[in-house]
Image (cartoon, rainbow, N blue to C red):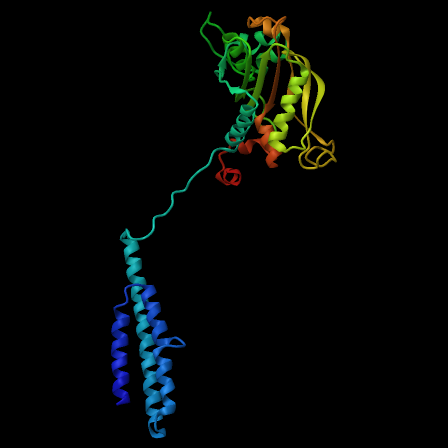
Length: 345
């Protein structure tokens, strides 16, 4: 009788295993028959209740049942794997599977930083202004109080474009100050604008130089503006970007289009002024230039320099990004290496 029971169980188990549709269903059957609380364990536990003369034959029958179930499961698992491989080879697509999320990109690190800068200056009352990258020398030099003999106008220091004989010369702008000139020429004070964009200079490409890079420049022209207003705006900008403890330092300098002029330094945000490798042990990091707009610049665009004053500032976006993110090579921004872009994205 016991042998008949075991045979019926084997027949039923093999039929259920053969009907398993996937690996998950097969695993459930394996646990049901071969698990610690499965059918085989339950049958083995019955040996103690049998007559001693029946135990040997019964034990052999249960072991045979176990081997049959194990073989059936192994055979069905191989069959399921072959079927899955065949479906993949045939391009089978299971519409019931969850969809694969698309790979979502991110903005370029320079674009992200530019948007952050614009957001900060927007809170300070500056609006974004744009201008052409191909410019006339008057906007790039003359209106900015850069005379004809100035070294900055040397053809070797600029990308002058070929133009027909008699046509006005053109060049790729070497600074975004050209946008300030265009705004002042077309609009009347009060003005408060910030202009990010690409500029071009024929520098040899290396870890810290490139023939194209990005600047962001700001300009304010109103009645009664002073150097105090300039420093206040720069201090608010620095603290919005790097925290409430940030400080700025202005060192006397010279630029043709501002007077007085200064170099703009931020307190090193890594060592907080104590000196480290980032700030070259000085405690300060130079970020750009600034100053009060030269009266000659105001007069060149038709603004009364006796009535209005203004201040301007500018900094390189790549330089700020390199310092902020600890990037040692400027070329990484233009090589389109996805591994680099994903780190900052």
